[in-house]
Amino acid sequence: MGDYTSDKKNTRFYGLKLNRNTDAALIKWLDSQESVQGYLKQLIRVDMKGDNTMEYRIKPEYLDLYGDEATTETTLTADEIDSLAADWEKPVEELLDQLIPVNFEAAVHLMDDEIREALYKELSPCSEARFLWEYCKRHQKKYGEEFTI
Image 1 (cartoon, rainbow, N blue to C red):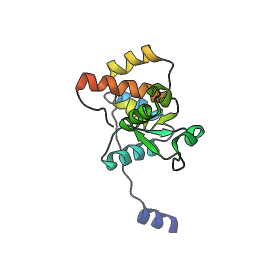
Image 2 (image 1 turned 135 degrees about the horizontal axis):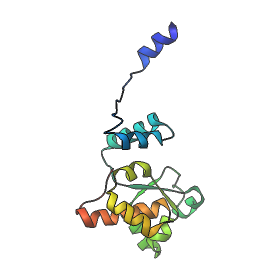
Image 3 (image 1 turned 30 degrees about the vertical axis):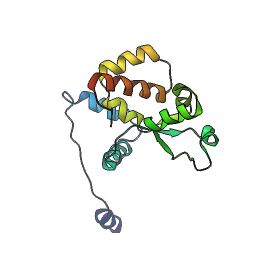
Image 4 (image 1 turned 90 degrees about the vertical axis):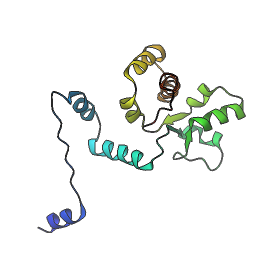
C-alpha cells in the first residue's frame, strides 16, 4: 500500500486515445519509437524552450576542433555553422559531417512530405545533419520562413 500512496503522491498520469482508422499514421510512428514516453517528453521539452530553431551537436570525435569549451552538449545553430564555415574557410558540408542534428526524429515528422521525399531520392545516402540542412534550405525557399520544430 505504501508504493501506491507514494506513486499517487509523486506522479501524474496523462492518457492519449488514438483512433486506429483516422490516426493510423500517428500510431505507426509512435509504435516505431524506442520509448513513447521518452519521445513525448522530448517533444514537450523542445516546445517549452520556446526557441525551436534547429540545432546540431558536435560528434565526440570532433570536439577538439571546436575549442576547449566544446562538449557533446554544445549546440550550434545554422547561423553559427555558416559563420564557422566562413571563418575556417571550409564548405558547410564538411562541418555537417562533424555534427549530429538535435531532435532529428521530431523534425522528420514535421517535414513537408514533398520536400522530404524529393531530398531522400536526391541525397540518399547522406548524414542526418546534411539531410536536415538541405531540408531547411528548401523549406525556407518554399514557405518563406525558417523550419522549426
